Length: 248
Picture 1 (cartoon, rainbow, N blue to C red):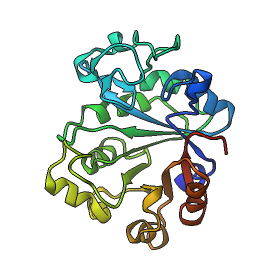
Picture 2: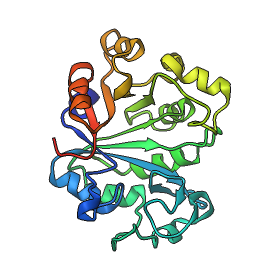
Picture 3: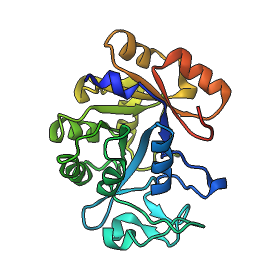
C-alpha cells in the first residue's frame, strides 16, 4: 500500500483524541484509545530519556500536564512511567507501549522532538521499537537532521517534514540563525528527501507546500486544525488535517 493511501485516508488526532473536560489529556493512553475508538489516525510526540528510551510526551519537561518537574532527559524511562497526568490515574507511556496499545488498528504518525544538536539517539530507539511493529506508521520532525536520520536509520518507514513559513528566534531558542534560515521555504527538501509534508494551517496557501504537493506529488498534511475556518482552509489546500478540539 502506498503511503498516500493510508496517510491521508482519515483525519489525524493531534496527540490523540484528547479532551480535558472528559479527563483525557494529550498523549496519554486514553487519548490514543479514544482515537482508535473513533477510527482516527494518531499523531504523537516522542522525547528522549536519560537511558535512551522514547517516551510519548510533547514537552521536554514535566509539569504542564503531568505531576512532577524536571527535564525528561534527566529521568529514566522507569521513573517516567510512574509519572501521572494531572487529574487522572494514567501514566506516561513509551513508544513501545503505544504500539502495543494500537496494534495496527489505526495509523500512527510519530513526531520526533529535537534539541537541534544532531543527536540521533531518539531515532535509533524509534528504529528499534518499530522493527517489530507491523502497523502503518510514519515519522516526522521539524528538525531536518532528524528527518535525515529517519531516512538513513529507518528507510522503510515513511518520513515527513513538519514546517511553517517563518521561524523566530524567540520560538526556536535552540536553533542557530543558519538553522532557522535553512528551514524556511522547505529549502532542505533536496537533502532530507521527505515523503510527505506537514505544514501549519495558518500559513496555507504557500508556494513551498504547493510545489511539494502538486509538482512532486507529496501528500500534504496540515496542523493544527481547531476552527471551522481552519478546517475549510485544510480542505482546500491540503490532503488531510491534523486536528484537535472537535470530532470531525
